[in-house]
Length: 340
Image (cartoon, rainbow, N blue to C red):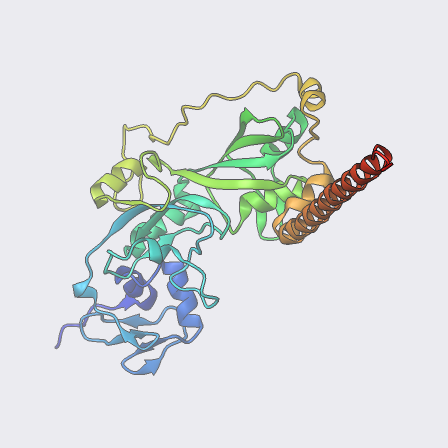
């Protein structure tokens, strides 16, 4: 009797081949973008033999044996898309790592205006370990918001809020620094859903000026400049996560999460600070004009205002010069000596 060939779930094989994370591979299957032996497969749970079956994604054949696992820490700058390509022609994170020949994907997402740490890999199982909520991998973010964050606002952020896709509650929130008209806050989360921090802040009336991810568990962007990257080994990655390959925590070893060297700012003299710098609370609606949905409109209005102001100043200077010239002529006429 012939020995049965090993059968693996299609999405697992795709993730192992570096196509994307397992969840994203499931979306590719459901979208009908995957073929097995020339036939489109759009049913989850389909099993294949990677040794014999030919698997194609977007008409490109994947080969499990040719894949070398890559782990790359990238400091994403603002104005880069966290995608492999962009139909609108905007720059993507792939433009920052042209030297990586393997097909890699980001573990998690940072939106266009966000910046900071991204882990790039072609190891689908590792990506799943980091992203799955049960493993409670801590992601640390530093967020700059408009206005002053007081104790009431801070407590609201810590308590969390019910979203459409579940309850959003940070593991911790603290104030890092007060600027004259803005505030830096640190968020630590174990589950970062789509735009969770932005949605949480907006739900409590806050407007974000800058958002950056500074760490994933024990991995940080310290020493990596914006736009630059650093290769690490799987062993180094697992050590930074304090994990075994099966996702379990290393026994008798405390989880070495990233700890910021920045001390918490003291929340005091808020009213005096507001008067000194003529600044409002962070949840004041007047900050909303700087939100993404209104940002470009605000910039256009400011541009028009500056142009009108410049035109008025030019008109005033022109009028002053004309007045001075006219006054000079009249003065010359007044003191002209009459001819005898």
